Image (tube, rainbow, N blue to C red; front, side):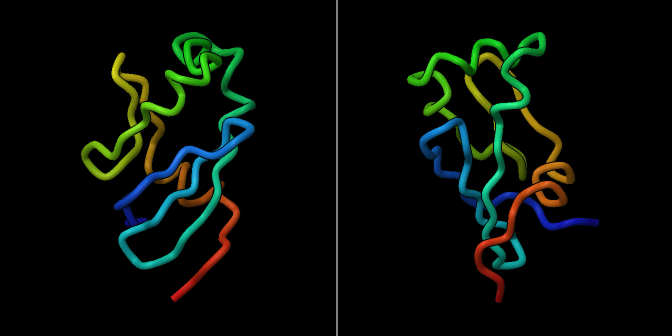
Length: 81
């Protein structure tokens, strides 16, 4: 099983800085999701910035979330333990 999300920080350009449970840190680009279904709501920058960690992944108030395995595998790692 891949590590889960322990902390998330929204960044400019619809990116997320994610700290994982194994100590690694990565950046995940949400921009490619913004044209699809429920993720269109993330285009609103204020709404995008309301992201939180819920159950080991990232989620927004209207229940959009991203699979934690996708976040780990597709993020660009910027720090490793």
